[in-house]
Image (tube, rainbow, N blue to C red; front, side, top):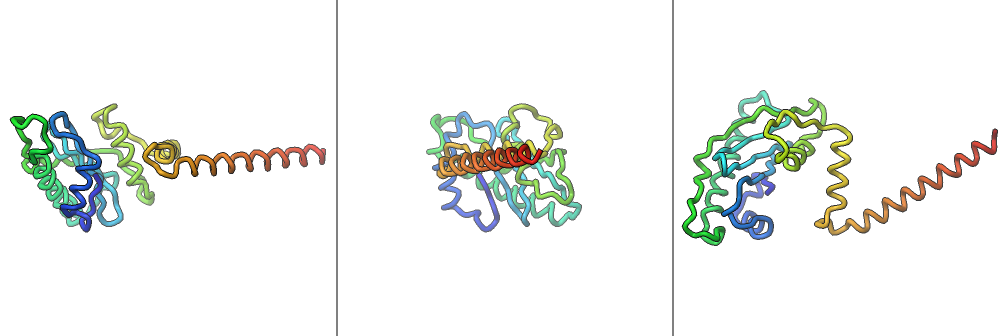
Length: 192
């Protein structure tokens, strides 16, 4: 789920629920990508631990910005509570429904991006992909390898409608580079 303040409306959220979320009976965590002021951060709604885990790779020293982010987190929590309490969201109609809005927001210490980098989205992707490997959010590191792995995953995903086109173009580019390097090597050898 991706949330920006201007997109937080019922039709958008219903679309997300219908398209990307299953039934709540077995749901343990909901990942919400948050975007505010050209910055991505992650909210993990932990239904098992009853927590709103807030991960931010570039913590603001401005209290106003932090309060704005926390306010948006509360707004999302209120919506998710409404969402997961809808009867059609459950197989077992007698299941105890979570009271998400009452979950405590926890701003977890986590790895931080370099001050001048634009890696907030990469950090969010890494946390979402690897959260099952650890619960220590400090463990994550973002580098060139991280960025490339995410790009490859996104490009080669079965959900990407242009994967085949990108793959063909990548192969053509690689072939052209190999040919260029080969011709360069032949010219270099010819001069010796």
